[in-house]
Amino acid sequence: MDHDHDLDARGLLCPLPVLKAAKRLRALAPGDVLRLVTDDPAAVVDVPHYCAESGNAYLGLEEEGGAQVHFIRKV
Image 1 (cartoon, rainbow, N blue to C red):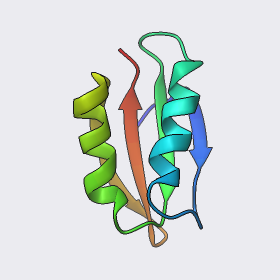
Image 2: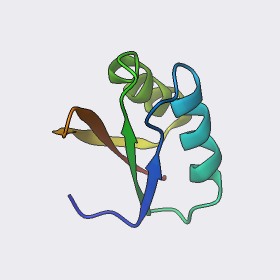
Image 3: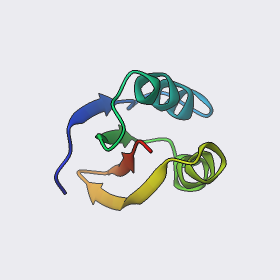
Image 4: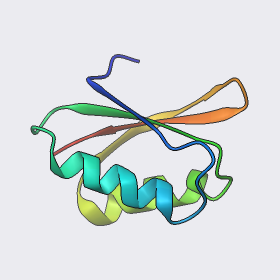
């Protein structure tokens, strides 16, 4: 999926992947897409939930080399 920014949060456990994504998203322009890579099993639930609560758009999840790749569009 096309994206504008990358954030590698592998090795970090809940809630750090979401906290780092939230911090990065604050610095982005509306419409920018963040690609978040994590290996935290809880992120499958946490990232979509964060997006629903924050108003950002959750674009989906892909698997890549044993990691989860989440795509978030800043609204």
